[in-house]
Image 1 (cartoon, rainbow over the protein chains, first blue to last red):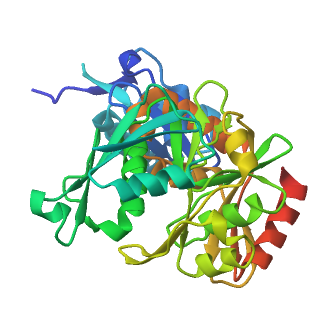
Image 2 (image 1 turned 180 degrees about the horizontal axis):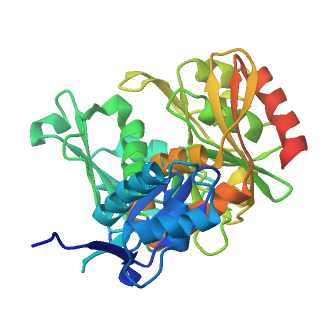
Length: 98
Length: 284
């Protein structure tokens, strides 16, 4: 049996407050009361991700349409995939299994 | 138990003491402050044991909020004990404002806020400026209004430490000082009564206009500080950022974006005042 496909979406219940500061962005996570100070690509991922769960590949494609991810698309996708996992672990995103 | 009540900015304290002398000293030093009918917090100065009320008297700091491991102080340092007790109530209990561990002075309705580690000179600088044309707003806590973002004064007694004591004694008459407490856990300490105008205007807030991170002991220098660094340092300088939740986040991010910030190094009070005046003209 194939491993379930992992998808990510905005967690509406987390109701993030996002304040760009400079190169860093402050994010208040209402559900936990924790403040995160994050660098790119986290704010960029949050800007393109929606309420419909999508795979890391689809999210990377959407980011590539807006930002220059460089020539090595696979490497960029790998980085984005790792960040998505971290964000889901922190509760900043919802993680779903298709 | 002997009792004293005092209003400092928006906070009202009741201080109880097993000994009369600390209460007499507090009443003397806080004589220009209002006496509240109802208090927010109680601080009690109690003997560590019944015997220690008389024999090598030793003061334990009690109150609504306590630090279980706080070491008692000798009775000669009871004023410091009272001040530590009052600070502790604010640090652990206050929720009406975002509380920053900082000093502040005001001019033309605008506040200069200074924050840094103990020994950075923020307290001494506020005391110097507060006696040189600025209104002293506080040397320990700055309270940020959660709705307006304004700085609300908390002008308790100025707590001068070590070299700052002699520096201020040169400028201010002796009757404004409390007793010298030598060899406390924080070094030598002597309290200075804030100028009369600071107490009279302690209900009047000011719009934060400049934030400085002073460092004492280095050649004069000014450095910009990035928004993200200011934000991170102020979350550390706030004792109630976390419990205030969303209000704390909103108030702090607004402050960080609205208020220009600089780190300054200085070797003496004159140098610091010159830096402050030039940055104030440029940025505030």
